[in-house]
Length: 91
Image (spheres, rainbow, N blue to C red):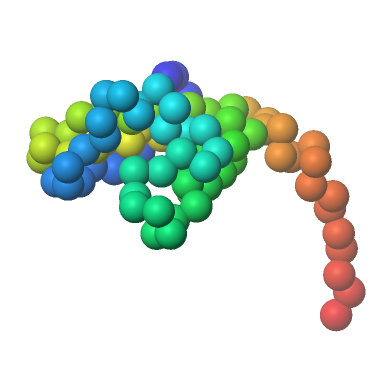
C-alpha cells in the first residue's frame, strides 16, 4: 500500500486453525470455549478498518501463533468522515 500505514500484531499462542481462518472476521465466530466470548471482537475490528478504507488479514507469525496485519490509507477520506457530524461547543 502506498501512502499508508501497516501495523502487524503477532503472538506465540496456538495460532488460528485453518478450518476457521476463512470465517474469522464474521460475527459470532470464536476460537474460545462456550461462554468465554461472543466472537464479535474481530468482526467489529474489521468493520472499523473497512470504514476507514483499510484491510485486516490474519496469517501465521514467526513466533508460532497468529499474525494480524492492519493496513490503513493515510490522507484519504474515509466513510466515517462523512458520517460523523461536526459539532462546535462554546465554553
